[in-house]
Amino acid sequence: MLSASHLSICYGQRKALDGFEIALAAGEIRALIGPNGSGKSTALQALAGLAKPEAGTVLIDGASIAAMTRREIAHRLSFLPQQPTAPDEMTVEQLVRQGRFAHVGLFRRYRQQDEDAIGWALESTGLAELAQRSLSALSGGERQRAWISAALAQEAKILLLDEPTSFLDIGYQIEVLDLVHRLSRERGVTVVMAIHDLNQAMSIADRISLLEKGRLVFDGSAADLAASGLIERVFRVEGRFVQISPDGPPHFDVHLKRWAEPVALSA
Amino acid sequence: MNTIAPAARRRHHAYLLPLLAVLALAALALAILLGVVDLDPADTLAALTGHGSPEARAIILDIRLPRILTGILAGIHFALAGLLLQSITRNPLADPSLMGVSQGAMLAVSGFLVFAVYSHDTGSTTLQELPVQWLPLIGTLGGLAAGGFIYLIAFRRDLGPLRITLCGIAVGAVLHAIGIGLMAGWGSGRLEVLLEWFSGSLYARGWQHALFLLPFTVAGLLVLPVIRRPLELLRFDATVARSFGLAYRAQFSIVLLIACALAASAVGVVGPVVFVGLIVPHMARFLAGQQSRIVLPLTVALGAITMTLADLAGRLAGGTEEIPIGVVTAICGVPLLVALLRKTP
Image 1: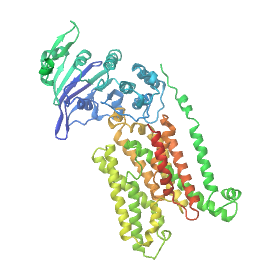
Image 2 (image 1 turned 60 degrees about the horizontal axis):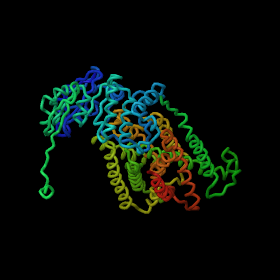
Image 3 (image 1 turned 45 degrees about the horizontal axis):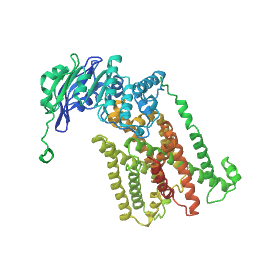
Image 4 (image 1 turned 180 degrees about the vertical axis):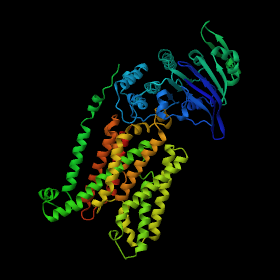
């Protein structure tokens, strides 16, 4: 499906990604976690062929991404960056239609299969009613769903999402995760998503990759991650993993320091 | 399944394009019929078909018609160049002068004229006696050179839209300063005629000017269907556009080249007519609303109409001493821009 080996990327002098490795199975959901600036976005950009690696290769179905045109890549892989921007007056449907560019190209008319894909993308993100609304008139959650919808319309077998749940309230967060899970299980879409919420990552992902300062320090299941003790070291937090249900994922419970209240208040 | 019905959405604004086509024809008719010299409408019509009095034929066929057509073509050039530049730089204030194209053309023309005056030294005192037939070509080359220079600088720094705009402003300012300095330092009374060109004018533009512009216009219009979809995608971040499958760098370069060629050729022929490239795309977007498909044809139609009417106004208002079209567009452009800005959320 999608794999990368020895992937290194430099921004000037700084090594943003250092020897990154990943191998994904079809339909797998992979969570990419790590502190701010640990290289999650860079790793996604490299996997999407958007950042040129200093060393290493990215392969889609065995073929090097470096040798593919943007359209060939877009056929196989769709990538949603963090907080993308669109022209203000654009409507939801117009945005989602852009997702078909890889299929229609410069000239070809939109066929029934294109319209179906657009309709399906709008339906699955619950935006069919809002299709004619302009993007500037949407709430943050609706706008994020519109972008996901555009990525879905691309009908690629690989979906890369850079923090798709950030800035959404818990309701929309769960909706997005739900959608991701459905895509993976019903359509066999392979998903890689950078995500900050550890517990969401552990509950949705089949495997988890943990990055620290551009280096991959863990690649495995949530249970193994819980046993490794890496979370507390990498994120510099205290806490413990608890098993809420016997066959469910582990849950990380952060330990918050309780500071003593000022004397005047407690008196 | 939510099947989208494009036909239904298109019908929504279906009256707009025919309306503008009618308006364009009306403007054309007015521009032919009206002028400093009062001609009998019947005589004018006869002249158009090759009959009528010799005087009417001379005025209509040799003066008014080529001038109007030059204006229409130049208007289309400015408007389209503005739209393309605004799209790819994602800057609503972009126009040919912001990209240094106008200033490049201006510097080339003034440099050429200074050179011509000193090398000929025939005692020529008017622009007409100088080798003016070269001006359009010189201006076009100058504008293209400026655009190409800015492109090269920005290309090495990875083509950020903001950077390319800032480069354009900086390079434009330098070229402008040199051009003005050339005139001020070496300028004799002979070069005062240059001022007329600098303000943007259609005065004494003939068939050769229209024919000079025509290949650029035809090429520009023919290429529009090819760049229509890339142009939509170029309005997004590079990352997003590339994710959707656009060869960003190549398409950006193609569109920039088209914009520079259109702008430079127009500036070369009529001088820097300000505000047309800036405002017409905004008018088109305002009229089109969410119908992004019709923005391109609207821009073409409005560019032609605006230029024709502005030139007509300049011809009629000034009497024998006509007001250059660049002055008319500047005066009318400001309130229009303010009005459009108020409507924009």
